[in-house]
Length: 210
Image (cartoon, rainbow, N blue to C red; front, side, top):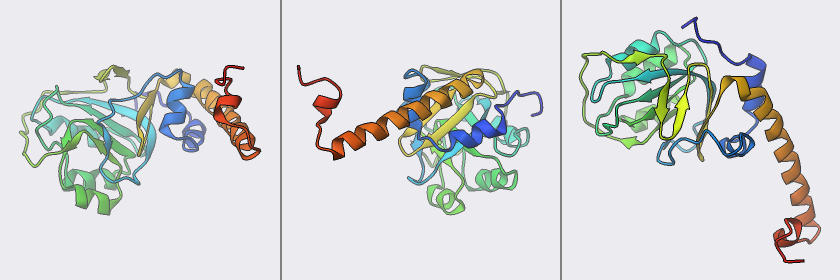
């Protein structure tokens, strides 16, 4: 969808250097999706601008439609009205999204065909797996703000996911969060050097009461 304002491509490339936990901390401990949303396969990772989808419960037609509105590299962020029992995404949708070179899927719901999705190496993050089929009546919304847990996601926000979880960074904050992430990693490198030199975490962080 051309109307989305996306982060600059160089910022997306820089974000790939950092894990989701580091970015979450760098963002002031904001933007973490519910812990139950995890990759279908542990090695999966995604990083790209959000295309948001609000799907009616037990229906996935709007998700199909979103595949053809997203641009290469976009990440579909889908909510399903709290009805988690459906398998909203599977093998065929994964193949279609791969043909479109979409960057991945994060769904606050369930998917199916997990082994086949893993074989295709398309990043899918979900609450779990369900074999139940869904309707094709439609009536959802694409590229309106959605709430995933306590986090509001707007179209074009940066979504980063890895084995630890998923974090969203508001588009306008991406550059500053990446700078904070760089500083955080530099600080942790110094801590590891101090640990290697024989100091304790209690001493380094001032938790030893001295």
